[in-house]
Length: 614
Image (cartoon, rainbow, N blue to C red):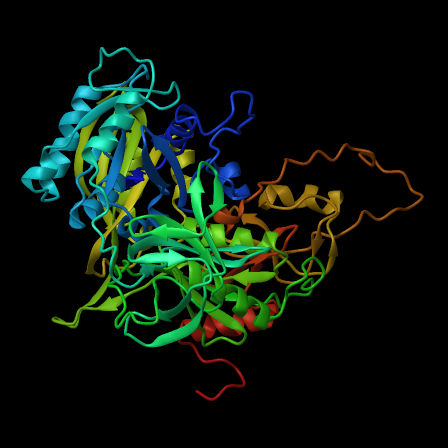
């Protein structure tokens, strides 16, 4: 059967997964009475909760005798490693752009990667049924983007469709019939070239997606670049440098049909398949027949820009809420993550029982931590830090910079510009985007964005939208002021009482409820002043037989500020840690003992410490 391999690429929230839902429905994948969840491709619990795609996933439909292998990709910049890997499996792509928001940073990123691989994209302007849609202006923006990214003449002559993924129609003009996606199916078959592969050569494919299955073990997905794969055929696995990893047999051969993986006996070059039976193969190893002499070329992935320290939970409450608490268990889990996630890198830290985990951004590492805590892990996380590098030509210290695109109401433009300028941002562009909104473009150090997002939402009353994309390395921009408020730190062990918290709430913002377990060094709130304050949150009211005025006053507590995992990671300073367990997220000081904290503070400032040699 003839086939086409394509990816759906776009910025986050532009409607990729919703469009794939409609493609599956209209291609007859589901029965008429079959109940299908919305965004059926997002099967992961975290994907459903957050409303974003985290992992790239394959599906396949048939249209007029042609098999269409479709890969749904993540739209968030932190998961760009998934997109880079997937583009090596496909011969074409559909670039989705929101008819109101237009071209955004991740649109530029994914399109640049596709053009560099020589792919000729189909452009689909989605959500044209929005009230604030401006499809023709967005078309001009897309053409300018193609030109700026150095597209060749063939790529510049891109076919274009106007669509509404939610309503399930796509047409070549705005005033089309708006009935179905037939125009899109026909355009894919016509425009996307069939796979250019060698059918007569020995079998070979690159692993592009790695998953774990309770019954089949490790499942590797990729496109067969040459030859034919058959069940139980012997294979060998080669690294990019040509070294052999293992030999084995293809115990299972699975092809895609709708949302299911269907076992087959044979698959030919050009098809996207999943295989089982190999125990040590990772991404992007080459799986090939024994007679294949060399590995297939693999695509290099952009390096990580941000790192965090993952440590064992050595606090007084450690080991009470989780099942997996040792450094060996944490190390094994992180190593397993690096096998399937090429954008993450793990190294052993200089600290005891700790590991440095580097990735693309706070969200990517936050998703990894959230996944681990749901699996029963307990760990403590250090403050994110950017990965610096030394320029090989000048020897100058350089840091990662990001392009930041902000859409805000006109009334909040001033406060956003002021806050970002304090974080060393340089404004590149400022223009009205319609509807009383302004679009601001900045270039700024990645470390300036750590911890800013919650402040940004507060400043814009929750109406602002901020998008970011790795731009490149540039000379170090100088020191950036950190958090201005100190912490309220518990100086006793026990459980918090309403009486103690009522007295403490005028000191700042609390993070804990009455009855919460606390220990010495735990952060229970944010001080209203700039220094840390040690407090007693477990103090109880003395009960006597003497009545006093005001004895029975109602103790009304302000609801505590609850920090999500990402907010907690962004909130902490260098001398603080986030304690993550399956049931709770706590903040604590790195050194729990107050005397040790003072000694560490003096060491950091270069001052002498009593009892230590100068």
